[in-house]
Length: 188
Image (cartoon, rainbow, N blue to C red; front, top):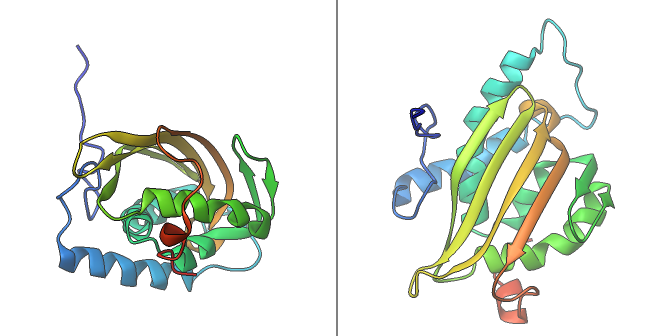
């Protein structure tokens, strides 16, 4: 039998299930997310001897917990900035080309994922150079019902390059479009 691993063992915070991140750490993750956004360049940086795949993977590992907190907090303003201007987003409602096209649809999803009394979790996350693969689920805090789940592959060129390719499979068991009151909770 193969050994099971904790995907968060070397990361700064564990978002695999509810209740593992303190309020203070969550606040730090939001500040760190804003700092990483400020490093993004408008043009995708080259991978070379000065900006290696190893450095990019290290930056992706550092960034990952901040992304989780940004989603949990419904910070659409930061989520949008995690994408390259030339984003290619492949999903059931897509494909979307360019950051603007993809983020026209996503606020409905963000509103459902970050709604009150629901916690989004990422039980699996793996890294390989530019690739960040993760599986996620949203659990209703009151009923323990899984309201949605999915898996995503991001191609993210570290802090300097942001995400330029996103492939996502989403399954919503309850609601597909967010009601207006939930959309109003998403910061833009």
